[in-house]
Structures are given as C-alpha cells and as structure tokens.
Image (cartoon, rainbow, N blue to C red; front, side, top):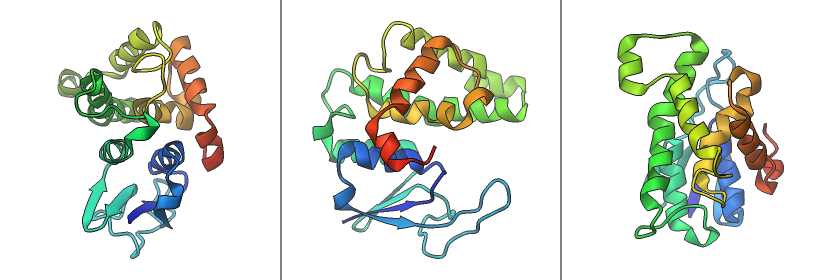
Length: 195
C-alpha cells in the first residue's frame, strides 16, 4: 500500500492535490506529520521516515520516494489512467519530464534566490535568473493554456504552485497569472483547501 507523509501548508500540498486529481485517496494511507517551519515553529516528527525530516515523502511497500518532482512522476506513471502524466513512448514524454525537472532544478532555486535577494554571476550562469525563468513560462503560456498544450497535467500542478502560495511576491505576466488561476480553480485544489 502507498503511504504518503504530509504536513499541511507545505511543499507536500501539491502532492496531496495530485492524489485527489488522480482519484486515489482511497488507495493511499495519509500520515500527517509535523516539520520544522521557516518561522521556527514545528519540529521534526519521529513518525516521519524522510531522512531529513521533510515532506513530501511516499512509501510503496519497501520502496520510497522523496522530492515533489520524483513523487509526481512516480504517481503519474503508476496511475496513468487519469492522464496527468505522459507515459513512456508518449510523444510528449520528454516535454513532460523536462517541465518536472526544470521546476526542481531551475525554477524553484531561482525563485528562492530572487525572493531572498541573493545574486551572483555563477548562479545566473548555472541556473539562470528569475526573469529568464518567467520569460520561459510566458513564451509557452502566451500561446497555449497549459504547459503541454490544451490539457492540464501534473507539470502544471507542480510549476504553478509557488505563484499560488506567494502571490504578489512572485512577479508574473498576465499569461502566467491566467494559467495559475486555471490551475487553482480545479476541484482538487478546493478539496484540499490549503492555499
């Protein structure tokens, strides 16, 4: 059985939304845990098996998965019927994987660096900067409603999350704001109700 370790109003919220999008909440044991929070509240929970005491964390029998992009990929591959991922052999598989890994490896780091005001030429050369990342999203979302075209995918769920959480602190274009509104207007987001 799948077991999902979750702390409300954290990075694991997007995975909780995905569980609802996939229609599998009845097939997953959800364990709510505490985590250390940025404001100093919370604490590491001994019930949480994540090696760093963080969330999200997913176990499937003896297998385990951490990091949102990896968990999203694991779940969309395991439950392909919902159509939120792109299976091996699908003509958009590479594009889907690219958005998941772009988020984890580029967008989230540059967004955090921008939010904290940290800049350095080595960071920009390696990861890009926030404006370049926004430009990349805008190029795509100015011509289509979702990252992979006309249909919502788990890549949209992952990549739109920071805009929903941080609102005006995350400068964005009209096309991006419209996309975020579409993503946040989904029934699964309302069901989870953590934003």
